Length: 79
Image 1 (tube, rainbow, N blue to C red):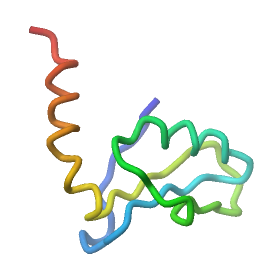
Image 2: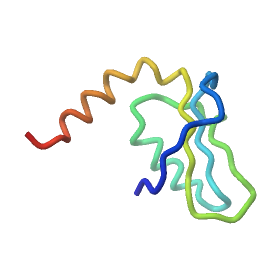
Image 3: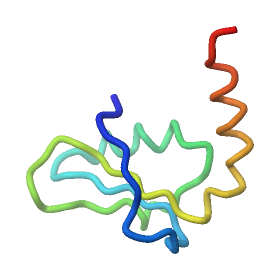
């Protein structure tokens, strides 16, 4: 469930990264299955604070997926 969307502090991030809180690596891998792009496992980063959420920072490497994401959103809209 998405609970919040926000912009990064800049738009110059080259690589997409997934941040997960202590103990939620399995959730991060489930999120990976939903992303239409291969994210290098070195860009899955554990945060040491306690928490129960994931953060995804979308980088410029996702630009080729823009059309895939747009088509998926269009398919989900009711006619």
